[in-house]
Image (tube, rainbow, N blue to C red; front, side, top):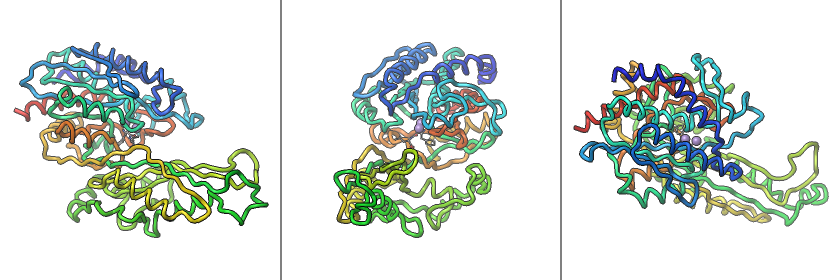
Length: 462
Ligand code: BES
Ligand code: MN
Ligand code: MN
């Protein structure tokens, strides 16, 4: 694989330009105003897989956005790697906080990315990381050193819960048969210290609605005499955590796996600087569940957060009003063994039970998924570690992430294979935030590292 480095050097401008073209299409799956763009992106992904060297590529229609499937089968006796990624992106708003338009990619330098980073929605999550796999595959085809079979499954609904992918996987287990699933849709510790994600949190996402009077009321004429849905909602939400920041929903922690002192000590070895962390977010202190460190709070512990809350008058000036209704979107991040559907039920039951007389409450479940943990002694993990060690010069550290890719647990259940999460993004890349970016270094390093994973995975499989 000596020449992967030179292949990347010779082709890097083209690799960057091709990614920029893909990033120009606003494939926002959550907003139907972009539906044609999402569909156009699936076409662009299809063409890129054909050009890179797949023998067979198809657009698989679903009840939502299509799944792009491609393959290169060289020998049924050899292992098969299934690459998963997503071509949809999060909404770009608040758009006014972007320093350049989200769908007009530009390269700018940052303190962390002195070689430059591509700024655009989806640059890191996940178009940039997904496209590294297409380019790594192109290299292996061009250099006649693809050591095994490859299948690509690139979906367009990850950011909205992968509901249709679930059905697709359940109905196509034979077609998707593989020996290992490879995903780049997570991050690593830093450009000097690679890490491999060994855990993802599960998710339960709900929307709540509190209704008081049948219409908005004058807050002087009625204030004090009727329940104000916004006051009540705020009170109900505040009661979901106790003074130690434990979640108060009965049964919520029942299945939470407690890590041993040894495992926690092992976790604490990963490089982390609390002062830098606070500084990067301009915080005077961190906040969270008593008894756990920052890294534990955002990986091995479940959480409950309001993602949005609205109601009443929020326009210019003041309007004296008691709103008829108040709403909030709430997510719960879950850890392995917590079942998301059961947690959704526990939440619903509890939230209804704490509603005072004078209001009615509705809970609408959105989507969810189970958490995931993967062992570090599998061939896949070892192959990934060997690949990172070779391109970064230091071994990768296993890290449990706080984010969720709900489909990963389903892959294991339906396809009976392990997923290796080889992420190349950084926490500072601002995924889901304004000014998302992906380091040019990270993009090219990913393309360089992926073919080594294939090489070592096939060697270790013998
Ligand atoms: N790629 C992210 C998840 C991620 C990012 C995991 C960084 C680990 C490190 C993915 O696209 C995502 O945003 N997932 C959503 C869940 C989904 C159901 C909307 C999430 O975690 O909020
Ligand atoms: Mn993603
Ligand atoms: Mn995402």
